[in-house]
Image (cartoon, rainbow, N blue to C red; front, top):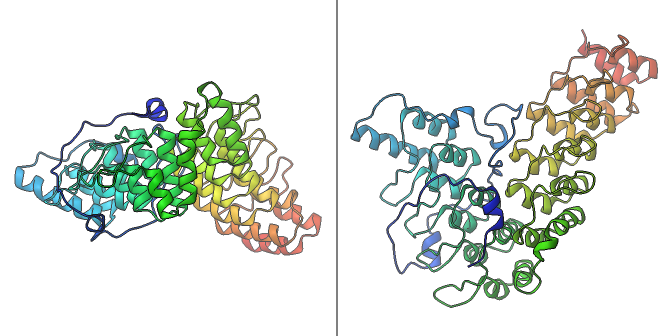
Length: 447
């Protein structure tokens, strides 16, 4: 049996095994029957996620209430059953707010209906992330089984929810459990997947976590690699072949991971993690693998690292973090990768600025448009005495990009009357520079 290096480092087991009835003789088609597949699930936050300035529940983040285990009153058996049934219905319909309300009233996230579905199990396959986090914070049995004797990890792998698989790895879910179809999570990602990006990501997470790639399926005796080759999933087949033929040596794993993150080689990164590489290892400039991946805009490598719990707030020797660097690069896709990891939006770079400030200066229109929706402080003042609005005017070129950034910031509530250390406002700076369009916008906003 393979070792599970990532699991051993970051997992915090949340519950004990819960047994489930076996339904023998079901086909793969029967298992998927009646399920509505979805490719949309928010990426799970790290096991010990940092404090964020975002509003509770935004971008899939859990509400503070998710961790509250208080029950409003003692329930009798019939009422408990009613609440549990309603919670399962809320989970099935992805209604997080209703689920929170029911949990506060005492509904059990582990209660299963006649089909052996529970709020937790439904969250693993249907999402959203906030629903999964709600169940985990209220004692979900992470090795609970569904009617196919499958774990939540198997269900998530079936759907190609790599982020959920990574979260369940960190929660302590068994990697190599075999359901009554004779399949592990790795088998399901290969056999029931279509070989697309989300399934490749899922296989990478499982490989990095140490899943046993040599286990054959019960009915045909084929390994996941053999199934991948037969299905024409070339990228997955190549990765699984490397697990057996080109493993990373344990003594070099940290260096290999750093290099793979920098160059954007997610398969090698997965193999390095499998060999025991430190997810938070540092290079000679105190940069973590995630920071290197973000700096070079290596999305696939960054996704792998985030799914397995990499810290978006790890600070290097220049006071940069993965999240802060997104404001410099302006990469909206990378911003979306990092947001589910709940970065601290209040952290400051070496100039005392939050990420929206360098983005405004550099004319990253799409980034500014997206980041103002996170709840970041658009009026934050850096050590130079400048807000994002002031930087867009003082360090911008007055052209269309900076004009649009000024508009976005004003629409997001930025205060045009905040002056710099010399008492000069953004409007006065725009007028001095001859940025007529920006000055008109600021003049209208200041009335």
